[in-house]
Length: 77
Image (cartoon, rainbow, N blue to C red; front, side):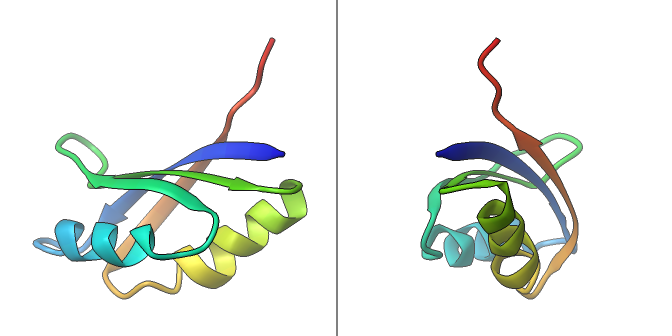
């Protein structure tokens, strides 16, 4: 199982709507709108890195109002 935080920048005024829509995507465990340099922070999981990439590119980045994403896989050192 691969888990990651996905940091999202949105168009002005779209953070809450983007977080709500992303929260309903399979594989997303949490999506919250926040303040700071990013507008939404998502915690997601997938069976492997390839599936995580597909989740981000095909589903999360397809949400209207997103301008940029940064995927940060969780590692246990």
